[in-house]
Length: 163
Image 1: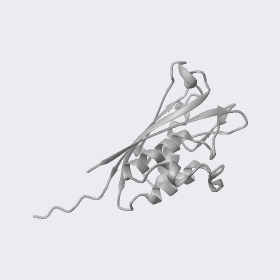
Image 2: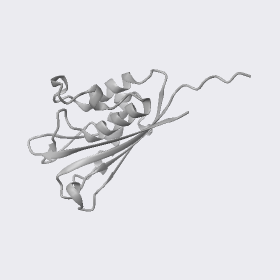
Image 3: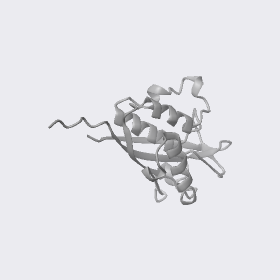
């Protein structure tokens, strides 16, 4: 039986911060405000993985009040989440959508898939990254923040069929 998880994250854009999306440093005039590197793509994927496995959410495992996680690389946190998953479960696929007016994500998609796959120990063909704008509507449309959605499919081991 496949288990599915859904994740969502959003952070405000801020000056003086590096922009990291999907584990990739993206040259941009602003970054995302947050306790860690605020990588909304990785955060959404972590929540989706934890949800599919029934392990809560990233706030349970990496509370923002815990100084141990200040300025943490989200790719490192993703590797910790991978280690929380039952060892015999398989990540079938990850599908993530970035919601941002700017910057354009296309040139960074392949690098994001590679970075995420590397942190999880899976093939990059299992990680799909998409992007869309908010058609200049709302806080995303005004360029005030970036959000991401992610879904994952996990397959626990199948019981052996007995004849």
